[in-house]
Length: 95
Image (cartoon, rainbow, N blue to C red; front, side):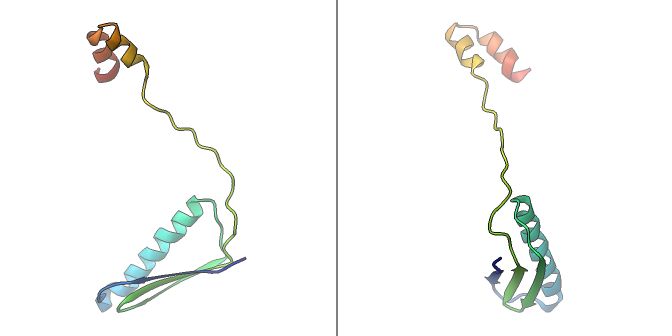
């Protein structure tokens, strides 16, 4: 399984903020990767005054399959407007 290295270049990071920035960077990316259904063996974060680096070892090459249902807007409101019943439309959407 492949390794993943992510390096962010930035302006000067103050010394007192480097450790916290690298920990936050690691948490955000590992949580996001886990949310996508990918797995990894270990992670390590590093920081310098101008860089944040994250190394993930043995990242899975495929994510778990998942399905998502997204619901759209109501279509009944448009029919009520066409019939001239704006008060019914108002009750459907705003009350």
